[in-house]
Length: 291
Image (cartoon, rainbow, N blue to C red; front, side):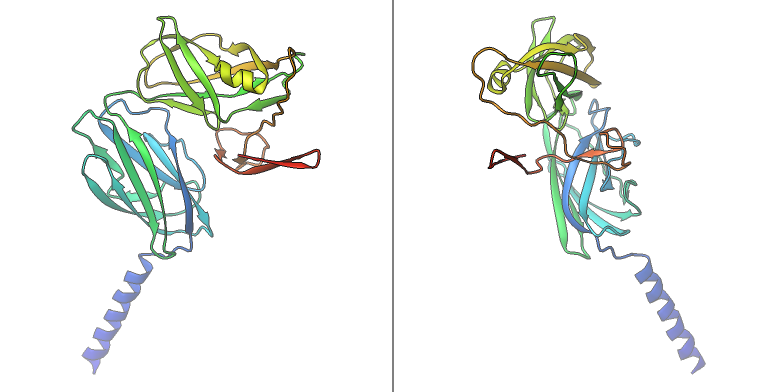
């Protein structure tokens, strides 16, 4: 009897240890967003990180993926990565708190042997809540990714005072001194060039069609020119005024939707932008839907 009692007690201890080592989370996943780190891909090693709810720029990763969901609580998260070159890997991570890097085993790293452009698909799963989210990333080992951040100041009456700022869905061109013209679009104040940029001096010109459709005229951009090196991160801020010629029937509402994590009322490095958020603008007994 004594031996049987000792064995049962040992089994209970082992079962209890196994259960407590894999904490169950109530976190129901609803979304995932990739946020490009400032370094960008300039080599063949793709390094990913992941945080819940809040972006974390403090790590030395090429991309940080931000998980979103309901009822966050610490626990286990499973990730499967299809790296786009035929390799598929599985990873298990432990969530500790909002905004903290999830520690994965093995790490979310992959060394590419080719020089193609790859579509990397990342799927995160919380087995406990039976929820999953997927995000695709474009990776080009042979090209340095260049990031440009910008917001457009609208000084509608040209009195030197900014009336509003725009940061989403704004097409622009980079005009190089060497005659190169590259096009991109700002989404939540961010844009990425995966290839095509060579080192040189560039200026920013907002797309003329977009300006005309919204009744704007670009009067300046700060800085007026800047030297770009592939793989770097740069910021610019054009200023537009309202076109007083002709009859413009355009109305515009500018703004930015973001999670104000530090509660200071300003979109800064501690906050995370929310893209594609639907809004309704009510004016003159009519409702206008946009995002």
